[in-house]
Length: 236
Image 1 (tube, one colour):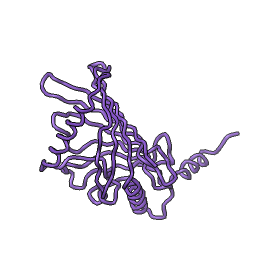
Image 2 (cartoon, one colour):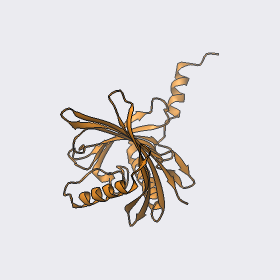
Image 3 (cartoon, one colour):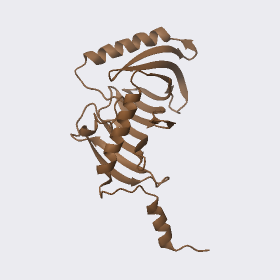
Image 4 (tube, helix red, strand yellow):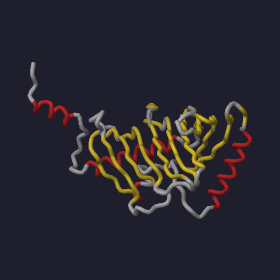
């Protein structure tokens, strides 16, 4: 049996999210903001455990060194407090060393006058949306019922902003994945790419389940390549 060409085209468009407004962002951005606000509220007073595998790579992409850590994040009044539960590097316990390093980093960040990018509040959050411009890039090539939305700081010069693209379920108003990079790279970094995945669907909505990151940088002939994977689990 042969199907007319137009029936295939129609089935493609019927699979796309339907919005009453000609501009899908007019309806979609408030829904994404509401979903993000709900996710931010759910984490208040709740413990989140983050397991990270950090690897330094050689020129062939093979692992030179491997650091594993378990951290507990607790949220109070919109701020995150992190405790290093344990950490090992190439099988050796370095928990105290990592705790000291994190304490120094937090102190330096608090004393620094320069703003740095963060992932605690994403561009679609109601407290961040006003800083960003958004653009619908069209349906996903593999899943045409999902939308791709690009984002970047409005001023284009923000030192603590993010630029990238999100994969969104337009019907549900949910984030599924964000691929991003900071507008201003950390010192000595030439490249930083970050992917956030929201796969842990719960009764109240999706939660951040994994962060993948890769980076390259260095100075003169000393170069470093790193990658990390952080997976999250949530206390009841």
